[in-house]
Length: 592
Ligand code: 1PR
Image 1 (cartoon, protein in one colour):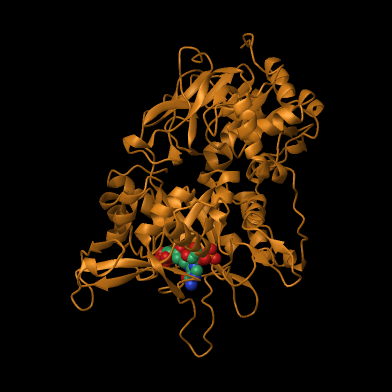
Image 2 (cartoon, protein in one colour; image 1 turned 90 degrees about the horizontal axis):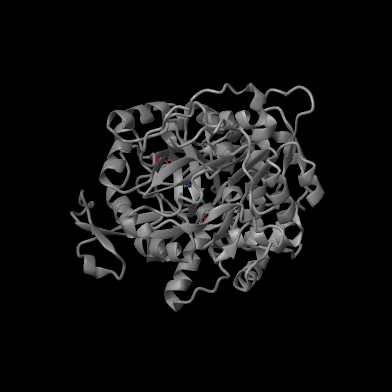
């Protein structure tokens, strides 16, 4: 296919004065953008073996040029490209772009900050020139959005101007949760080559902004996706492709899309399968609570109501397996995401706890669905007086392979302070990390405990009428937030916390319940309904899953977007696939 002429605003690469101001306001991220890992690897590396690498080496000169401006987790894209047998050459100068044989641009972070970097170092012009020459290009996520004229994200901010249209925010007023996080199918509009065969299979999206189809850009559109409105899911013109979803996080389907881009000659030209409009799939997440046992080995553990010690004479930490192996197994089994919670992170320093970073690095080599990591994300001063910000801690997790970070205790303190003063300082870990990496990368993990009440007016916190009365016949309860792994109750309810952290920049809530944790009697429907009705960001229901029916119940009775379980998966009582099959049978859309 011959590419029609392009027109862009690149040669002048203008940023409006507003955009300049806004971009410079995002400069903390820019300075961070080029900072590289300064933490040394230690002997811990030897403790973890990378699992068998299943990748196939490509023959011949197989090099992919990668444009990484350092704003987030590009490690997953690197891993996927390597897994498919290619070597990576990083762009250092604009000339590297012009000389590339195939260029992958996995845009991450905020639009303004990305344009700022591209404009400052001459990359914007080189990118436009490369694309205008119809050279092989694949943009991912923000790498698609930046091709458009402008974005409303902290803007308006000018983009590369290659495709007509403005990137705008999803509208949450129609009941759709923003960010759009999860697995959707596509409607194929035009021959896209890389999407041949995708049919009704789901791909993974995570974004709050999207480009909309119009008469002016319809020639570019190869597929759309429905989430409230039909937005542009992918574009293709000649050798230029870009996708709003994350192929590197879309399991086997995503790998085959990448493969089709990297090996274009191997693709058969046939009519792409039509995809039907569908809803966002409900996600099933496997959670690995991780900590060092008494011998110093990092193990997957699992508590009963947060007590992870065996009740034997030795009182050992319960050991349910090795983190990297179990995560790999859950990926193969069909988990839509894998979460690691470093449960002693509140007292250990995660950057001193390098095994956790190694676990992430090795896991992300072979697991191509989203990875979340939590535990210990806060400001910290080490024994030598060196101060680390929570942003540095989070950045290290992202660089090691995390797609999302999860904040527990520190988010409770931030919410308490915000509710007390009514002021957003911009300085909390939550605000800083979501400003730099986007709120879709920030999960707040809530660890509430039920406090029974005879009368809902007895407390200043939101109380609910319980489906099952308390031990003394109490009909109500409020859900008290805790910190430090449930050890300390705080003067704030789960409802108040959820609303406050949404305002402070959380993109998702992981809603645990200490009373239900490890009990296998089902999720706390009262709590999950309360919180998922109170916020417009996605809520992950957690704690208590014991049977496939519990997943159906939580999706039918609440507005949860995802359900997470640990014990039943670790003990192999219920495989992930059985959960999915049951949900499907009950008419709930899932990724199979
Ligand atoms: O406070 O930012 O350092 O984060 C600490 C993180 O560690 C929080 O996300 C907190 O939930 C978690 N955590 C701390 N202590 C424990 C513990 O168990 N002693 N684990 C803990 C929380 C809860 C779940 C669990 C589900 C499902 N684990 O995520 O996996 O309840 O279990 P089930 O399916 O077996 O019922 P910070």
